[in-house]
Length: 297
Image (cartoon, rainbow, N blue to C red; front, side, top):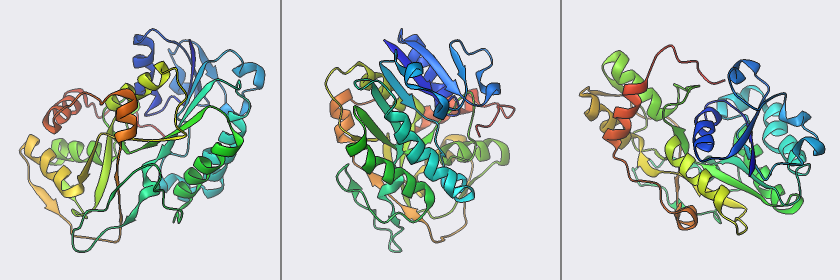
């Protein structure tokens, strides 16, 4: 089975060794040549430049090359629309008809405003998408999710929770990562909006689900919620602070979003990821953290 991994940043650089270890024949496409140093079967170009002929031999394509955050999309809204939706859709239509394309969508399409009374938002499933996106990131993602159903074949969007964990190209600003780094560097965990909820997705759990989706022979649903756990920001901060033995500094509340996801469908298809305690996840992150790690752009 030949796999094309599009994007070798924070997520892709974690997935690549897991895919290779599983015995898969993997090629990697990224426009950033520095990320591909030492990577075998590297394709150094923008994925938008890959032709029908270039894609002809691949059985599965994994796409993790989008504008990957709200700030990035706010600074380049036209680029977010092109990259996360229009270019990706054209790319999907150039692949072999039956080749499976799994692309990164986002759980933030379920976002609601944080409740002032601390009530948790509902845990939504794939059928309960909110169709009132408030920023270019969510708009580009939900538009791709809608268009793919009509204009592409054998394509599945995995709605990722807030991704976190150690990776060769670390994103230190992501919430779990940032809290652990602050605990080690500053001796405290900073928190704001304790009553806001997130679905957290650890990279090792994402790898588990991606590998299983590749193995499955039957057709996949067009959308799959993909996360590890629903948790309030306050609970997350308290757990991380307890592991490191440091205090939590509460900066109060501001206007922000909140969401939880129901991930029963992907768990039913793939089997649940291995249960790991928050303390063990913090221990793994702390043991492998190196401040000199290059941040993923």
